[in-house]
Structure formats: structure tokens, C-alpha cells
Image 1 (cartoon, rainbow, N blue to C red):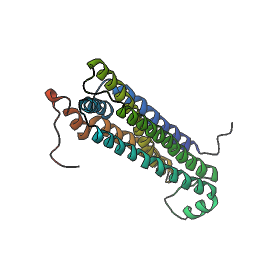
Image 2 (tube, helix red, strand yellow):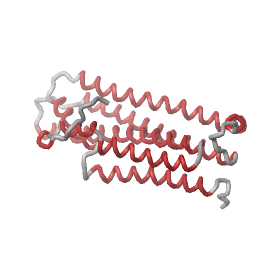
Image 3 (tube, rainbow, N blue to C red):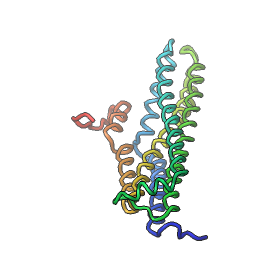
Image 4 (tube, one colour):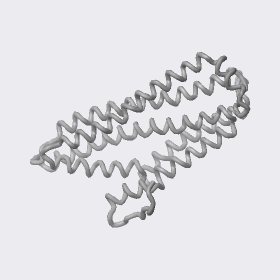
Length: 242
């Protein structure tokens, strides 16, 4: 198979990008069961939410809150469709796009094939995000049904715990799918650096991993979520807002 349609440095940059994305995803999954992360702390907070919900007679506020989460996912899914449509339009107008951007001194266009590979990679990123967002949206739909079928507060404790366990599991899956979609958006931003040059692409992919790691494993937001369910080992929060 002839792979010469891309320079060697472009292949190295593409492989590094895939290592960063896939590698960080696997790392985050492993850390989920070993240390506090945004994902597992949200799961603990959701469990508290569902426990309080089943103890209430009126659950309208809970269903409304879940609907807000669902609408956020729906917004991203709709936006992703427009992004993909725009990228397909650009892909169909490759000659015009190359002619327009070739006049810019900081844009590298090795060949038509290289340009198309970069656009196709962006399309793949956003297509992946779209499937994750739509699956998250459907799971939130299922969770609304479960909220409507929540047991009364007078039911026995075993029924309550069974409902809490499986509803929280479903909501965690929906939240994780949404997170995967947002992560695809973040890595797609790194792909934009590839249009400048391959070294910048490698640098941006590395920076994305560091940013995601800090937000999901070391951020003040994580500390705040952690403190709500671990009062005996409270983590310090910064004094500034942001």
C-alpha cells in the first residue's frame, strides 16, 4: 500500500494524535476506579440526588433538572450536524479552499491528498462526537422514564436501593457518553493545528491531554465535587473565582 500521499512527519503527527486520544481515554477509564475523578465524583453526587428524589412525594423538580441535562446534549448533537455539513462542503470545494489558504504564509498544504486527509479526520472526530451525543440523549430519555417510574417513599428499602443503583448506572452511562463527545470536540481543536504544521499539531495534541488531565483529575471543580461527599477529608479550594 502506497502511503506517500502524506509526508513522514504528517504520519508521525497523526499516529501521535491517535495515541494521545486513545491512550488518554484508556488512562481515564483505569483511573476511574483508583482515584477521584470528575466522572466517579459525579456518580457519587448523582446517587445522593436519587436517594433524596425517592424520598420526595413531588418529583417535578427532579424531572425538570434531568430535562435540562438532556437539552444540553441535544444542543451539542444539533450543532455537530451543522459542523459536519460545513466540513463536507469544504471537502467538496478542495481546490477553492487550497487556493484561498495557500496565500497565507503560516498554512502548510503539502498536497491535495494531505488537505483532504485533514478534513476527513475532522469529520471523523465530529461524527464520533455526534454518535456519542445522540446515544447520551437517548439514555437521558430512558432516565426520564425511570424517574417517572420511581418507587414511592413508602416502598421497602430493597426496592429503593435497586432503583437507585440502576438509575445511577444509566445516568453515569449518559454522562460518560456526553463526556466522550466533548472530548472529541477538544481533540478536534488540536486537529486544526495540523493545517499550520505537523509540529504544532503534535504540540497541541499533547497540550489537550494535559488540559483534560488537569480538569478531570486535578481541578478545583473536582475538589468541590469531592468535598460534598467526603466531609472527613475535605480538599482545599482556591480563593479566586474561575
